[in-house]
Length: 156
Image 1 (cartoon, one colour):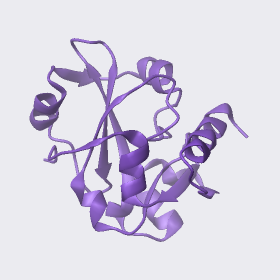
Image 2 (image 1 turned 30 degrees about the vertical axis):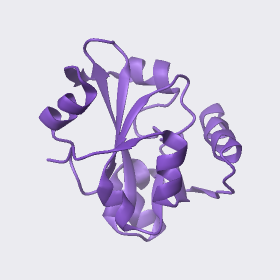
Image 3 (image 1 turned 90 degrees about the vertical axis):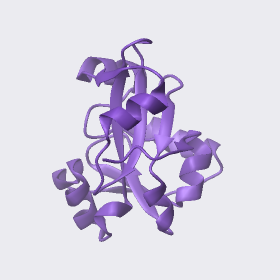
């Protein structure tokens, strides 16, 4: 088991959640592929969209429903700073995850996060578990609780 996967599993257990992590094929790198792999609607995939805060230099996380896109202007207003593209090295350094497998929990440092309210329309959503091949199912309310993400409108 990879270190990234172990970190996610530990974070979920520490939050009191008995969550099963499922291994998929390489198609889970996209929301559409992950939805097909686990048999759910695309919007039930909680995508971890990472930006670089231009003032702080740290990553900022937006958890969005699989079919939605982040509006950069709305996201910038929420973050209180200009947002730019986070490169793979920054994402790995601050979250501990590679692009395509960024989990909403188990980051190496505290991450400022927002959540798309569309995710709350479902009983269960699926998120990356630290690798591009692993996902886990979680109640959206638990996702909010364990990430500390603030619900907000940042959708294009």
